[in-house]
Image (cartoon, rainbow, N blue to C red; front, side, top):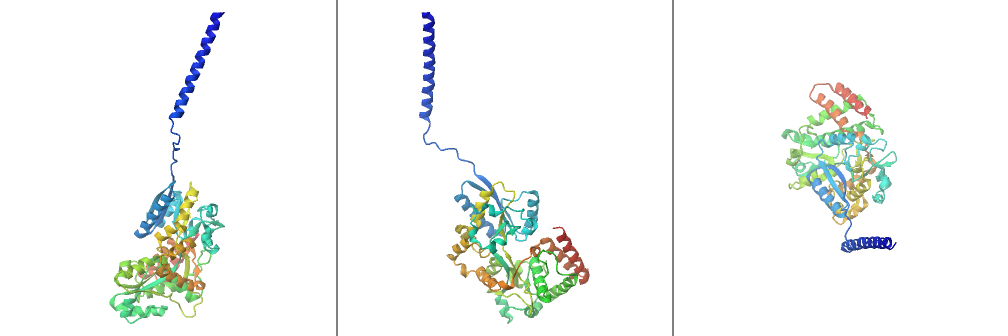
Length: 432
């Protein structure tokens, strides 16, 4: 009896001893742990941004991305960029394979290509907690709205502007051309020396042709839904006028023109977007030349001006992004952050965002050539129509150029070439 009792007492003692040991060890671990040890940092969220442009645009955009990451260390931004040539085709591959960047610089016309129903890009209205939409008017927001969904925000507004080398015009005793007849008058003196009055990229040549057609006939080239309003007879008329422009040295042949000809004086002027002012106006001025802005050439008593306005590229968010909030923060920074505005300045044109404009007023915005061009654009606001996206469609422009070349190189009559152009453009539109 006493022996069993002793065993129970010994067992109880051992249990208490073990419990005390556990308590002692736990206390030691607690005391040895650093009281203010920080929690493990979360890995940053990864998003990607893509854009096109020249070296200057690449430089300030990368600086802006670095600044964004400093302000938002929880977000890591990968970059994808390139020049314009070929960029539209690469974008098509990315969009169709769903490998596009989270934040994308897009052309206004791409809304019509990739998001006719408003589903091709993320609806920014759903991210207004992170994007300051109050910096935009309802009209400005409407430019990026498809089927009631806010797909993109405009960076700046754009239209065409003409720049001429004033020194060369002065040497021939001519002022700045104002009408179509003026263009031919000046070119007549340039032709004997092998010079041309205007050098244009193929898109600007196409838009120049549209302006002349609409002024001549008082009709639109495209319907509002993007279908063709012009017929074969109208295209035939344009082809013959196009040939006259080249033969009379008003316009340099498209395949022969490059910017070096404009910089050297072989070509006296150019037609470009306001957003390209830094290249074609400031760039020429830096060589010591006096540069002057020209007027939109018009026919007397024309019913339509034939000239158009559009957003000068836009920022959008991929519909497939896995990180919409982080992408929205980056998009808002690119458009509305004062520091980003000061990096970008007016390289893409005068910003639309009220916040960006306020930031640039401190930087002498009103003295820039882009600002002056925008002021002229605003003076002609009632004459300018919002561009039809198909006016910038690369396949449509290529169809026009291909058919026009057949005529210019005497492989087709103007009538046959016009019929080919009409059929090819209609095929492109039918496939949209």
